[in-house]
Length: 232
Length: 232
DNA sequence: CGGCCTCGTGCCAAAAACTGTCAGCATCAT
DNA sequence: ATGATGCTGACAGTTTTTGGCACGAGGCCG
Image 1: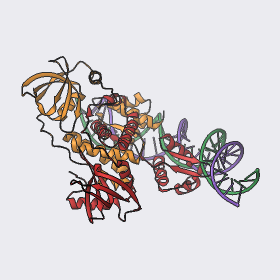
Image 2 (image 1 turned 45 degrees about the vertical axis):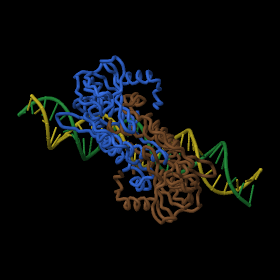
Image 3 (image 1 turned 180 degrees about the vertical axis):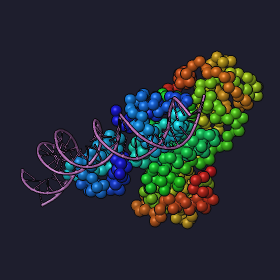
């Protein structure tokens, strides 16, 4: 096993633990000495991994992923930068902040001729239409989806009727002027689309929905007549 | 100097040459043996770099960039994927293709839990408004900008008047329903915005415009009262 | 065609980098 | 205070990388 493969493995092991884990445990899982484990941790930290180690406690990884060395064409870098600009201007504040942070990391390692250009990039994303205000934050919905949590929502539909229902949120679709939450509705026993700005209140039910989110999305797409790679 | 730093240096040296360069020249610049240079080339090729080598000729790099190992949070990966989805659905075919290619490279190295999710990603970009057809391809404009070439355009303005002028294109702005080309107009001696769908014809003048594109963009932004990091 | 230039690969000894053991110090939790 | 655990340096042993050499192949030009 090469060292770079081992570093990736270490990150994946760290990601699996939800509580502090001791260096001895990690070293044993990887089949290396504790001293080498310390060196590997130091290397990952030098590469930007947020790993905290505390004597008497163990290691905790701030959830993150490492992309290994990748080659991109000039056009692909431009597409990447344009994509981040789209997201930072059109998505909700939380994901926009993620986009800005990610772009900063990438720009820090671009060569001078691209770095000097990118603040004045060839492609700019102009402002989008104003979106209606959210009563329930997208980040709340996002966390619920990511954690596969059922939520209870008060929803005002197009005829202005308010209803309360328990749903299993599984996808969020961005259009120019609206955002749609795709969810399985336990009231209607089928998938329903909810405009996020019309969700007046939402709270966690306190339990996971009994299906994998990816499975739900696949079923929704099959029902919509959509393939998984061509959402149009 | 670490090997990974040396590989990055080699790529930057290759990028500097516009014609084939011999291995002996590269090895001397890096202070390594020719045998090691051959190994480094093979390593970069294995990492996806498009380097062609021909006996009696030398090496040519298809223009590309390497991003070294980078750490991203889950949110940042999601922002990246959403950005690519935006671009692949809303930009012109050429840059959309670049987005699709770049996303494929990234997905190939994401861990299983993100990879299995990403075709069914938490965030989807819905279709945008239909854009008016282009008579002059965005890729043509893009190349002219990138190569800092003056172009002559036939432009039909909002009162339907056709005019011919020589312009220095420097930026392209994507809105929901239009795309604007930002250029210095030699007819008006000032910056002008041209809707790309109203450019009826365009051709290269055959010479570079006498200013750096980045400088033009900065001046345009100052004139617009825009900072370089917050285009709103 | 021949000569020169150059890419590409294998082999092996030397050089460099990595690993594991040991020792010592510091911090945290109970 | 004690046990658990992070962190670092030193050094011998192990593994990987490098450079020199040899050989074969291909492109370019006179």
